[in-house]
Image (cartoon, rainbow, N blue to C red; front, side, top):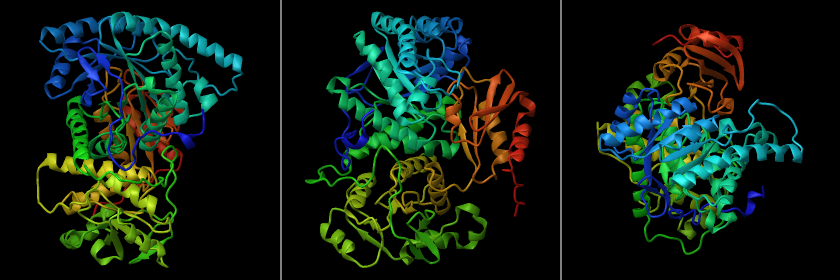
Length: 599
């Protein structure tokens, strides 16, 4: 692939503008073009249980799910999609169905008869997958491409004949041996894997498809989608296919919502994304409100900052395709370091600090570290060139933030600040320039505040911008601090607790993911800095656990395989013993310590 230096994925990094795409029709639902951003989810019921699948699909549609995906592991299981489809239609619901295909081209050929769309994963649709490491000659590489094409073309032709849609859905964790050995376990490899399949589809004049680039690491996910769109732009205006967004294996609770918001929200803010799925290790129905809230936030992007488009746009200060933290000088405030690679500190307001003062010693890892009113922080409007020039002319580095009330979106405003400000000055990130002082016990308000903060602060952290953080949109003192720390953890810039990669349930899942994840959290939640993957099956590949220290993976019904990194080390452990054996494995690798005694 060519250098990323000249690639552009977004027409204006300082102002919202939705990417223009062609329309992909999934049944009666249009994706892309002038259509709204669509929300979808995936059934957790066993595909062989048509009644359960129909019930779940109807429940999802009733709460706003516009497209429903269901797994089809084999040709025989795919046959039951007919009964699921017929049951949904008999209930008067026309929500489109998508068959999720891994490993089995014959399952795809059966599924395409009954559903409006087929999702294929290029890494495991037809490619050999032995996790082999070898050097491919050009002839060997071409031979495997030819085999893959031979397997894929019949599905392309059937989709074209039946007017079905297709998603070419690359997963970071399941790139083929061929792609891995030629391009590596990288965003570049993810993009090339998808483009191979797209070239075949186009060669057969099939264009009713869209792409996805999913990963469990938000940084990898963001970079992969940006790189894909940049390459589509470079290939020409007729490569304007829609994009499906998702962070795979996001997890559950606040962590899953924050990680999803960082990845999905960041891309939506840049105008990328025509349909989204939030993957939570919870009942699928809980995914819909989160996805809808993220999509709704884009309307605010359109409204806030309208008419504020810059006459001149400076060159951006970061590489959008490769993470590197912005270089600054280090400052020390009240014995807390900030900038030049120091741990990113958490600010709060004086009123919130005072509200928590009586129990600071009980807040554990969620303590506030600095009070903004008591710290030397300079606030400016990044459009004020005189103010920026004065800072750049100053002798000493200063911690800089953006003035409350500035009529710009935080992502755009901080990009502009980072582009114009000397790199020596550290930057304090805010989630909003409109501090929230209204008390609210409304759970929906809290989730909205959490998603906004994760989108705005998390996106910037993933681009290497930001040396301190301040959450102003959540009025509750303790909750605002918890959001701050959890964003830092999800963005990978400050690890203060156990990190989990947990996939959502689906019909492939070989154990109860929700219950098991909670058991593992209870046993290991004190292991600060340890990353554990909990996966219902291995369909997305050990690569999805690339950053995990240990993995707990369904290998067969009621049987668990345990991993160290990408390597399976213990097999077919009875489920009732598996959490204890995971703890033993962590101890074997000297990563275990006992939980501190409760205070």
